[in-house]
Image 1 (cartoon, rainbow, N blue to C red):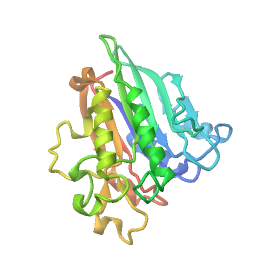
Image 2 (image 1 turned 90 degrees about the horizontal axis):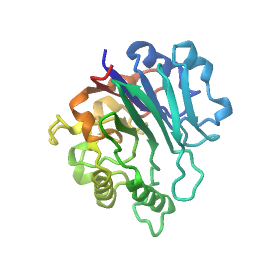
Image 3 (image 1 turned 120 degrees about the vertical axis):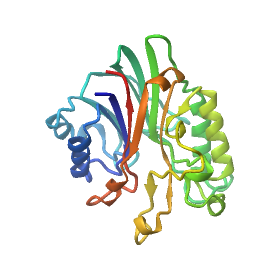
Image 4 (image 1 turned 45 degrees about the vertical axis):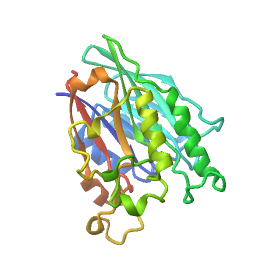
Length: 268
């Protein structure tokens, strides 16, 4: 079986633990990276994960907001819980995991959403988002013959024209403004990261991982955005075996507004 990594903004792991359990039972990824866990470390539901065979757990949380966690069926080792913009938000966690004879450095990110007004002069949340992405330039796709890097998470930016339901209508909407998309793609290239979700998918094809709670019928309107991403170092591209956006999860009971993305690699 290939090595698999799932990423999912769960919007409160304790509230939505039943659908997390469903994902792990039905899809059984080797590693699951969660964002927006909204739980302090001492209250993280470790027992529920261990019961399903996910014995290896790392988390970086806080009460009520943000938070990231990485759980795995194989050993992981925490590398870093990086602080961005001199703010003590829980938005990053990196671990190492072994697969296919390689030590994989796996980054789990939750980039700030940025608020509603795309003007950094009047919206401090948007300023924070831009500064956060700028600091991500320091996160490089480290690799050599015996190692590689994977970066996943809710990066809260839909960079390409067909990563949103309407490029024209969303150019002034936070998550798809030019200042965000240009800095985002520049940051990805600076780190030498490969956007695996677009690797073999034409840029003209729509790709979404998020549908707003505000839509009366999210499936019928299908006004989505690709806010969740999977990147890798160049040396893992030949091992990339494809991915799945688990769209049906948006219709599960008490769903997140994001759906899981599961990437697979030919690494035992």
